[in-house]
Length: 257
Image (tube, rainbow, N blue to C red; front, side):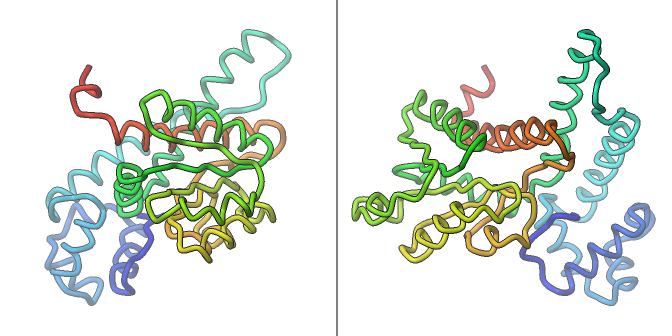
């Protein structure tokens, strides 16, 4: 709920009310929640469906399960800089992976992720833009898509000749990676793609960054730590999002197997 986008003023008011005390959901009906938030029962139910629930009772169940996950997560020690011991370092890396994946999953907004998955399925070509370490993450994601027969290319700079190619039509889907959302090269690319009317998705740390404002959709990455470890967190977070998008194109039989 904290990272939901595209909410109405009333829906955001309900979200803010629940976030102040999530337990209120378990003690009141949808009609009672509407009274507490000075909205309507239909608005409460509509918000529940935006959050991926079938209705208010299903939302109560999902919130209860999420609360259990949150409590388990809060008992999990955060990934801390290890000592010089090799054993300590080996234990530190899984802690980074664990924290990066859980926090990225929390930031996922289904109302954003679902249409992006649809765009991936419809895309005739996938372009991923990133600089420095993000470029290598882009290459890995493209390699995985190419392995399953999807045309995907990684780019580390703005090639205006390529961006002006008339063969790149609306079926071309472009992902742009910048965890700060302020990388000048990535902003230049986003502007060029926007002028061409191309479909764009930002992978960045916030919905209020310059990159997010230029793109059609934003998938939130996690890089809360500073120092050398921040690259590990952000890389794992970005790769997780690309893997979710990759799996969304697989047939159900492949996922079950």
